[in-house]
Length: 280
Image 1 (cartoon, rainbow, N blue to C red):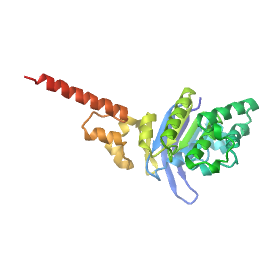
Image 2: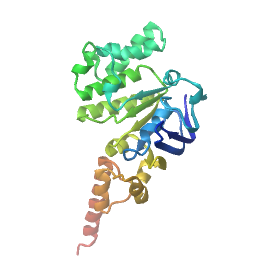
Image 3: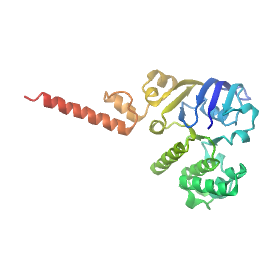
Image 4: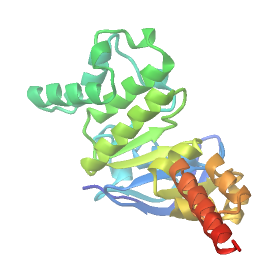
């Protein structure tokens, strides 16, 4: 399995723009990690360094035993798959099946494995029946799943998802949940960049918060969203459920609808017991 280790990493673009400063973190094999923060915080630069699209100006990035400076982007992409935020930046075939098949075929897998991975990815992403369609004839939300399938079919140890919930409806969100559960069963490492705090709290236990090109916090979700100093520095807002729990004066650590409902029921139960005890 593959760990991702970033040690004192900084990155400056050729025009002199500093995008990342002294980032140190380790993502262990099999973890699900969300990276959150405002635009310009350095999130996208960080994940592009993880899969070799960028090389650090300072510091080191290791994917497994590989120092990414010593390998090409194509080589690193065999270990770390990256689903772009905009699917139109990634799609270049005229039919869905060819798009999904390209990755495993290009990696030199045997024909039977290419077939197996392509079919698995198409079905998992709910687009098997669309395999003959031109991706650009499909809605934006469906094109997102085409690009997700194309990366999943490469069977990399690490998968990076950039804003996967953008444009998704309830069905799409459920499909993403199914994908994450499937990848967890396979012990794949998943890293996501997202502004969807509900998606974060429901599916990711480890949260990395970035602001002003550096790491602000790296904690469990229940710690992050009840840490006002971190929220203020990163200009983030907690999920609506958490805000509701705070307004109701409920205990800390409430992040999901299920937790909120359980806490409200417990509060009502305690009131009922209190009223019963005070009866004459």
